Image (cartoon, rainbow, N blue to C red; front, side, top):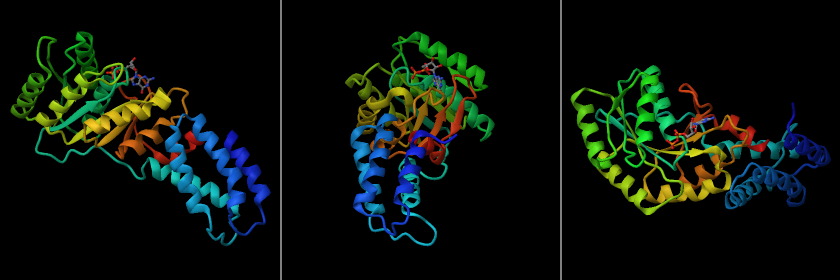
Length: 296
Ligand code: GDP
């Protein structure tokens, strides 16, 4: 079924037919539709502005060759630019480190860190044949430690115990020692989140990062977060050298515009998408498919 935006663009394409060149005036109407679609998908306003400016620059003056019509050319520019903004190709997990390769999970509370930690453990066991250990540094919520234990067992990985009376740094170092002694390939470190950004949280995760020297620092972000995603992403990007993004809850009905905002703000590739609450609900992120969804 054709989407609302595709319908609108096709209509405009028809109006543009016969014009041999994309000009400022014929491009304006289409870009307005694209802009609306991106805003409806909850892409942050500054990101939409940048995007539209880039598309416009590429479109203007572009010769329309062969059978291609100006409208079709523009649609293709928009699609390509959208996919390129969200990252092209497959960005899998980097494990190139002296084992154990440490993966640090960062993000707000409720973003899906613990769930994603277990999903990732399963992915690494099944697809990459790795021996995986998980540990929780969330000493503020005993339930979070228990939750990681449960989902780690579901994933078939090993869980390193921790308790709320310990310091996150001590927990992480003990887990790292254990992982080295027992020849684990990967150590996944789940961390405490907060409902909003705060300094204590950021300092704590920065300390964990310095001590663990992770090969991957993954920013886990809820696709339903919409416009707020840009502020969360900014704060985590300033605090940590992020190496990748996991966009969760894409099974929800959001159009997933957060992908565009978060990708542009952090510059880090979107590596995975969470597509269900279940342990196997993790997919390698597909930028082109996601571009279609964002455009609606
Ligand atoms: P954390 O606080 O960041 O560790 O978040 P959790 O892992 O506890 O996840 C918060 C809630 O989101 C839980 O109810 C999860 O089951 C749910 N969740 C996480 N990822 C996904 C996803 O990809 N899709 C759906 N539908 N729910 C998810």
